[in-house]
Length: 429
Image (tube, rainbow, N blue to C red; front, side, top):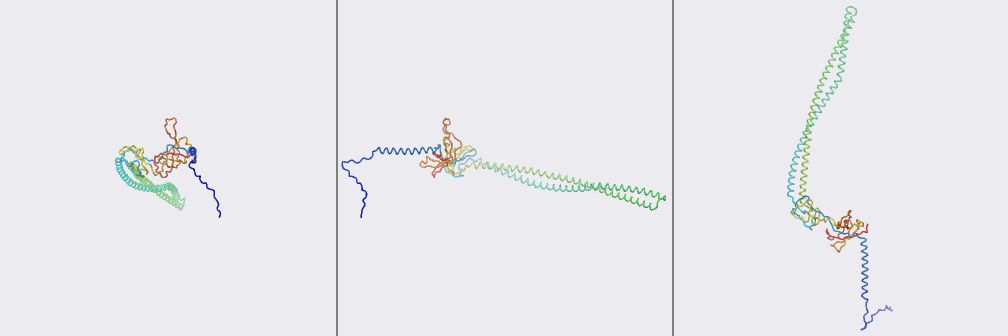
C-alpha cells in the first residue's frame, strides 16, 4: 500500500533568548488607509449628494394638515356652555356647545300660536269658498237652463212668424186680385143681363139667350162671394200673423229676462273670485307663518352646536371662548380636525424650482416627530398662483408656490400640525 506525501508544513523556528520579535507595519500605513477610505466614502457621499440635489427639490414650509372644520354661531348670541376641550375626540353629531336660547324658545311658541290662528282663518275661508261655489254653480246652471229654454221658444216663434210672413203677402194679393176679377166679371154679367132683358122686352132675343145671361150673372155673383170669402180667410190668417208677432215679442221679453237672471247669477261667480282671492291671501298668510316658525325653530336648533364631522378638537380661532361670552355671527367657537379624511401636507416651493415640479411626482418625507422613519408621498396639486414669503419690503422678496402632497402614514400616529421636510423627485415629468 502506497502513501502519497502532501506538501511539507512549515514549522516556526524557535526564538532565542536574545532575539527581538519581528516588527509589524508602521502606524502611518493604517492612517493612510483610513484617510483613503474616508476620502472614498466622502466622494461617494458627495456624488450621491450632488445626484440627489440635481434630481430632487427641497420643499420649505411643509406642515401636516387635515380637514379643519370650524363650528360657529349663525347669529350674534351669548355662549351658554362649551362642552369640549382641546384634545377631546368627538363623533359626528356630538353636541359641542350650547348657546343662549331663552328668547328663541319664546319666539317659537309665539310662531306656533300665530300659525294655528292663520290655519283656522284659512279653514273658514275655504269653507266659505266651497259654499259660495255650490250656490253660484246652482244659480248659474238654473239661469242658463232658463235662458236656453227662452231662446228656444223665441226661435220657434220667430220661425213660425217668418213662415207666415212669407206666405201672407202673396195670398192676400191673390185673394184681392181674385175678388177684383170676380167683381169685374159680375159687373160685366150685370150689364149683359140688363141689355138682354131690354132686348127680350123688345122681342129681339129668345128666352134661351136671356136665361144664359141670367145664369152667367149668377155665376159671376157666386164668384164674387167666393172671392170675398177667400179674402176673409186670408185676412184672418194675417190677424193670426199679428198674434205670432206678439208671441215673438213676448218670447223676446222672456229671453231678456232670462239673460238678466243669468247676469245676476254670474255676479255670484264674481263673489266666488273674491272668495278665491281671500283663500289665496289666507294661504299666503299661513305660508308666511310657517316660514317664520321654521326660521325660529332653525335658530333654536342652531343654539345647540353639533360637530358635523368626527375628529379631534384643536386650538382654533375660538379656543379662548368662555362660558357666558358674547360672540358675533360666524365667529368660530370649536375647531375640529376630521379623522375620517386622510391627512395631507401643505407646503410651498420657491418659484425658482416650480418649473421642475409636476403633479404626480413622488416625494420623500421626513417628520421631526419620527426621525427614524421615511414616508413616501406624491405631489397631489400645484398651486396656480404664488404667495409671498419673508419680508415684503425686502428687495429680495421670495415668491412661493403652494403645494399639496399626499402620503402614507405607515400606521404611525401622525398628527395635524406636525412639521416635516419634503424632497420631491423631479425625474418624473
